[in-house]
Length: 147
Image (tube, rainbow, N blue to C red):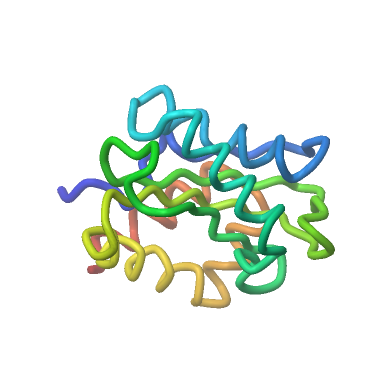
């Protein structure tokens, strides 16, 4: 079986977080533990929002968090944090924080396309938004098999 787009260890669901920076830090923990990214990358993501606003919020409640490829990234990876209560990210409510780490400008595009196809499906998106961790894991595993 192919490796899941986002592994079970990289998926977290919590009731709430104090603010969006805490959410980004929490969402990054699985990637830091696995040495996919460093704290430098987390700092770059936070700084990018502070400098450029909420451009990473792609749709209602969904933020694709990232920074420049390579800076603090050891290998490509993704992690997911779903908060049951929305968090204000520079004026936009967010419940889904998808962390994307890329080593260059192109190598992550296939996996990003796979994961975005899940998020763009309304039923799948609502499942993720509902915040049931086991259902999210099952959904992401099924999507990998279907590809």
